[in-house]
Length: 430
Image (cartoon, rainbow, N blue to C red):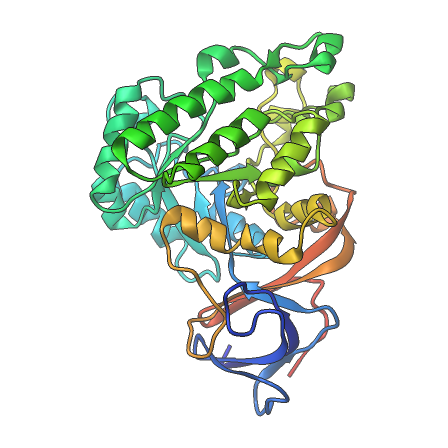
């Protein structure tokens, strides 16, 4: 791509110079060259479409690509293609692979595998060696190699001293620790949200207490160290309240919610369909409202896909034996937009995909401005569409949104000198 002209695009970029305006944006050589009205096309590739919106590039802070070890479920290249289809210009990939991403050489390997793609892969390094929770991994070496933060994913970090040391250690180089707030002993063998429905269905429940106890511990350690913490996939009223209180005290804490937790409730499990088996579990309707309020008021900084691709062999089995997780990287924005439309402004929704993730990682805020490096997501927030398995980019068989109508669709991404168009962006002409 040499030159690209976005014609009369509506900009959603809070704090940016073109926010809220309908403008032409000329991109050349990986930078935004001009923003204005009736810009000359010249030899540029022109993109013109009714309903076309642009924002700084979206970042997904939580996705699993299953590489190395289980590439047939997704893989780095296919995962990045799926991320592009989902409107993401960058994606943080979890370290819980086989082998675990717990040293600098494995971080470097992931980065090499992603070279040349329009989407930036951001490796998350393991907190502990082998995700064992026994010994800190090589955090600084991984940071120097390109790891953007550190997490043991959903593995239980039972030893509070290890988390204390990690928080102290990363503060030396401005790093971020990402915790998963679920106490494994309180979680037990829970399969779904603990409540009246779990009792009726005869399934072991996961009490909100499991999140409350673990998140309370992690926040106490954060306050002691003065470091930076990100609480991943908060899913309870109690969790939202704890994060809100911690922010009020001035602690450097951010939090995320999975897109599907904003739309789907535990009633989806009445038919024992394993595609709805996720961890944290789908909660009740009242909790969904609390999570939406947390997104609206900024307690929850970012919305993530929590993309966990699985194959039929791991999902189409007895409920108790099925793997947790659902595919969601292509539909994260559409699901969140469908859930939140009418509850809050489009500006706030987009902030949770742009400014929020950058804040969590300590990255500078990106704006659409003349001279800035090109990092754009194109989308239509009113586009009504149906996600179909036949046209899905991800290999994940475990999406509950196949055949479902959603509102809001990514249309393409532009990052550096590369771009990726959605099939929905038809009006592209030279």
